[in-house]
Image (tube, rainbow, N blue to C red; front, side, top):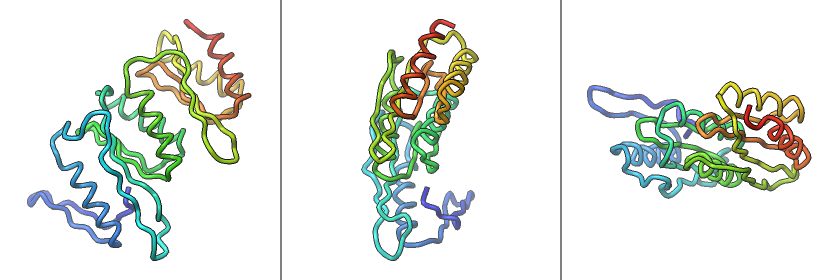
Length: 205
């Protein structure tokens, strides 16, 4: 998350040695302070104050945000990994990692990516949902993100629905979330309208 390559554990001493730019070391120390706690130390469903990558010095990551989000409902490693995969793909956020032992996600991105990642977490780290939820993205692309809770009988059926949506709409960002029987999609209003038609045709299958 801090793009810090010189970072090594000394297991016998329970210590970590690191080398990097001042902001990287400061950020790593901040992150350690949050993660080196018992599981559940962060309030479930909440987030600690963000770490803001500082401006200056030609830093290519200036202005980006690092965030640790505690999960409240997702408990299994598989479910937490599924949320990680969907967040990376839908929000174009490569710096998003689960810490299974602490039931948290650690991520880095710009303000728009963080807003979308937070919204996705709220949809999936929650009791079973229903219907379709929508998030309107900013920017010139005029794209929309939808989470549709579907009546899929099996994980295989859910994946078949995803494949059908991809085929019919040509959208590339369509991903299943099996723990919640949901599909996450990102596209234009017309593409998402066609996706809803596919979902309706497959309800109960």
